[in-house]
Length: 108
Image (cartoon, rainbow, N blue to C red; front, side, top):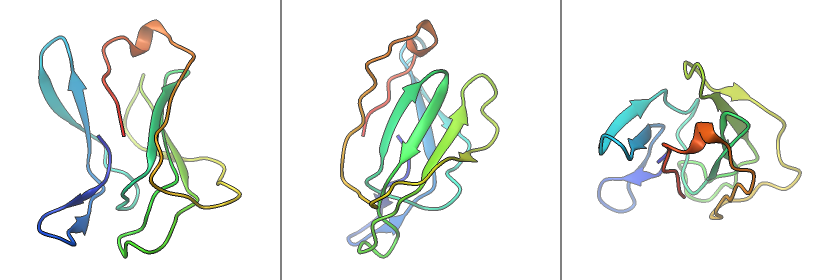
C-alpha cells in the first residue's frame, strides 16, 4: 500500500508505503513516497515498484508524477517521466510476471 488518506474525513494525505509479505504474514514499512499522495496506481515491473498518477493532499489536484523504487535496494524513490495528462483513481496491472515478484502482494 502506498499513500492514501487517513484519519477522519476528509483525512490527511500520507506518504507512507507498506509491504505485505505473504510468507511471514507481516506488514513492513518501506521508504516513504517523496510527497504525500492518494489514489495513485502502483505496479511491480522489472524489479521496480512504480507509483504513478495520484491526487494531491487538497483532494482536487490530479498529479502527473511517476516514481520508482528499486526492489533490489529499496532505499529511495527515483523520479521518472511524467504523464502527459495528470490522472488519479485508477488501478495498475502488470502482465509481465517475474520470480522476484512472487512474494509481493501489491494493489491499489
